[in-house]
Amino acid sequence: MLTPEAHTLFIADLHLAADRPDITAAFMRFLQQQAIHADALYILGDLFEVWIGDDNPEPLVAEVAAALHELSNSGVPVYFIHGNRDFVLRDAYAKRCGMRLLPPQQVINLYGTPTLIMHGDSLCTLDIAYQKFRKWWNQPWWQWLLLRTPLSYRQHLARKARAKSAKHKQQYINQTAPQIMDVTPDEVPRVMANAGVLKLIHGHTHRPAVHQLKVNGQNAERYVLGDWYTQSSYLTVTKNQWQLHFTSLTN
Image (cartoon, rainbow, N blue to C red; front, side, top):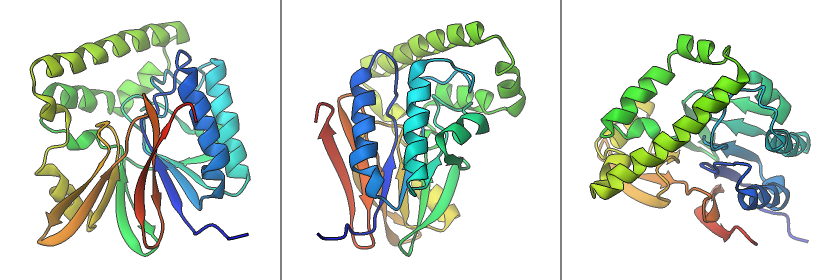
């Protein structure tokens, strides 16, 4: 039997929710069939459609925690970077999952290649309305206050936020200006140069692709992870190969 080549996995934008059991089932298969063989699993934000606090009593929250903790206990480290949907996920839930929380931007060594990883929403600087909102909810005092409101109130806010997000996205589609919701081309090389890397992995835009660019005159690459609304999507990185994968949710 051949020994699997050492590899690391990256996922983002699963947007797990109780009304999408097909995505949850696909995620569980991914953990059991792909992630179990990896050197590490990195989750780059928006694991859940919305996160109202570590005290969320939904069965889905417990199911995901148990599955990730089982993976971690098997010897596969699990790392998490917050997304715009789960920005108030805290240490209590991370401990239940057996995963380590990382800062919004992190440089890691991928088999000898320094690589910047992030959720990716900070790169979308042309979306002025979103960036104003992002600056607001990133304030520690606001997050502290939010998490101390009653659970029922946070659930109400989450429903409103989901509706507003859907309306916001549709407005840009109707205005035929989808580039506003994508990364700003000039921002990417600036951020990569500041981090001292020629490789970047992120999610958020739901536009999976591999982009070639220049950073300080050198060839660089940006890997964009896909969402899981219609298919599962993940990136496999080995010493010699970086590959995006797409699989039917029903497989």
